Length: 92
Image (tube, rainbow, N blue to C red; front, side, top):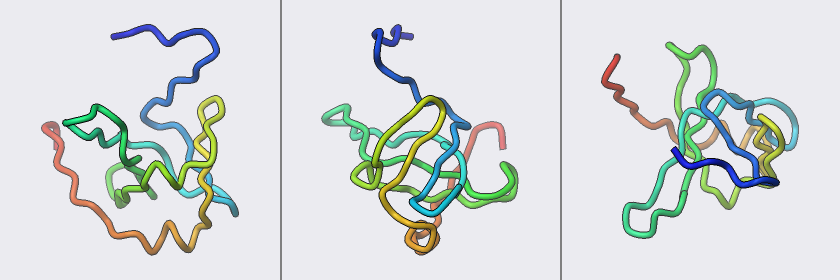
């Protein structure tokens, strides 16, 4: 685990995600390009942690990140129109 440099923010699983018109879910994880190591998408979990759906949001749709909140530059309808992603966890 690398320390977070002073002045930078860490985004952790469970952080709130807000669209331009309100709350849409929580951070589930980030998708990383294996070649570049860059984050390409945010996985957003809607609804209950065991029953909700997971949606990938391109990093271009992230407006800003504040302490424990990721703000998107898209609205709730745009988020809802994104396809769900099947997620398999080793503990599920």
